[in-house]
Amino acid sequence: MGDGGSISLGYLAGSLALWAERDRIFPLWVGALAFSPFIVDASLTLLRRLLQRRPLGQAHRDHAYQRLVRIGIGRRWVVSVSYLYMAGAGFCAVYSARDPHSSVSHLLAVIWIGILCVTFGIVQCWPEP
Image (cartoon, rainbow, N blue to C red; front, side, top):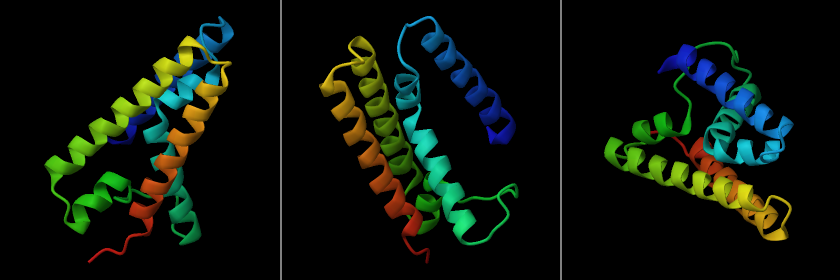
């Protein structure tokens, strides 16, 4: 998809989440939760590049799925796991949207974001061959 497509879709998703917040359909954090795999991966990728003093605006292949393929994990496995992460994010967002003020929704969101940060963080720190 590249940067052009992902930026456009990210803008659309963010706009819809803001609209839902404005009309009290669900809080903004629920919209962010739905896209949390992308948000966490992009944030950790940028953080890694920042710590390595590499240009943030330069084209790269440092996202988790790209690193996993370079490490030697098969593409089919990477895609399957990516789908599981997206399904998990979707489940968490839909569950939390039903009752966004419950402590269960908040706990579910914190656990989910923690899982994403740990797993994507491990991938970002894993040495490449």
